[in-house]
Length: 260
Image (cartoon, rainbow, N blue to C red; front, side, top):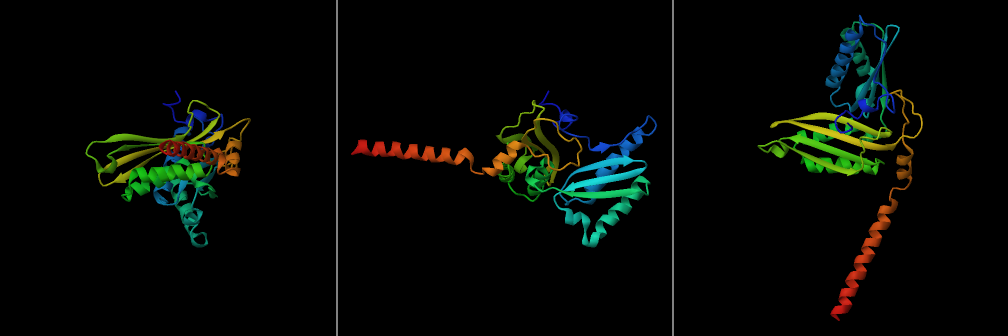
């Protein structure tokens, strides 16, 4: 089950909140649902290089509140806030609603956001950078920032090959069946000259113990495990490397003694 279902939808109501918060009756539920999809598609196309992670939509008493989570707030806000005002006017026309509010939240650690990591890999593949190099660089930066594990899967005509194939690179742990594990997931496409390449990214941020705020706009849901890894960037890994080097020196020294 954990391997088949979307990791975000699988954890809704447990450690994740809904990205659309509103009440819909039988008459207008479908209309609001389609409108949410239009808003997200429009904003993702309009702000193509804005580093958008997710778009949270809330409706209260006829008011539409759109919160954009991004790693590059300056691109969306624009000079003197002119760009965000233009986006607001365009959303009013798209939704036929005069009461629209746009909030922008900055993502402090884009290396721990699956959508931004996947989008970064896709942009590099489109710029003809080797896909293995792009994936390994993304994995290294995520682990450096405190991720417990990361898994990246790419599929398509990798490297311009005639036959499409699927490759998976992972490091650390990503237990998809454990609902209390905070796993972020994203699926994006890289549009290359030889066809589409699909990219899936799973990032494990640690275990969530106790009750968690389900509001998707809540910032600060870091796990204790990530904080511990931050405080000890070297960890036991460095000591293990020293032990292995020491063992190699001893073995080499023993062989040299036997030759003498």
